[in-house]
Length: 230
Image 1 (cartoon, rainbow, N blue to C red):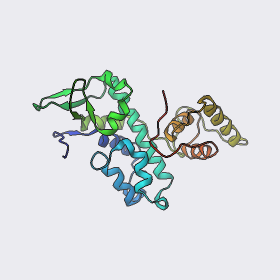
Image 2: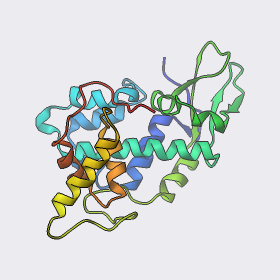
Image 3: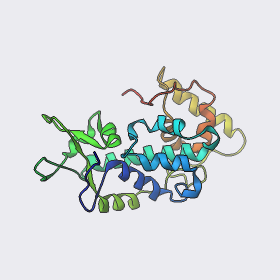
Image 4: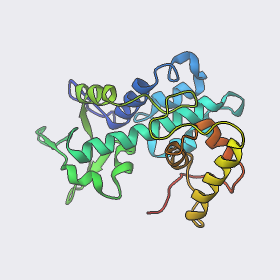
């Protein structure tokens, strides 16, 4: 059954995409990706569950059509998820749901700090305490537009470094390897996702492109939905 969204409201999957696209419109333009990949993003919250986006992309998009841009868009999407959740937890953005009677109520902001915060936003529904049915998450489109425009542009290999100066010059690659190795060693046996790596390396001025290069030199995750413990 199709989800019901009152006028002026959108679902969490669409909200995440809107944030990602606003932060880097060029990377999300129709000409920037294959038609197969575009169909995957457009199907989230409709025929595809965004919880499994990490698997949807390689399954539905032919390897020949997957490029660095696909990985960047995946990172954009997951970073947008994080920004939306932080805004909800801070109470800056409010999520709503409809009761059986049609009356709208808001989701308590404290709930977004729980372990299932990301999963709830990715699947677009929430099961309330004592409830028997999932409720569709409703977000004001105007609130999401405001949030998206308040955020800095998405991180990219050519973008401005906000937290650290870029590592350049002689020995730059060796220094990047040392930083990444120290980061991975501190994780012990936990293998991070590309999103975790990008976020960690950003603070050292290491771009997404270089992060992907560094990841290839260390054990990778098996196929399946990525998730770090803790």
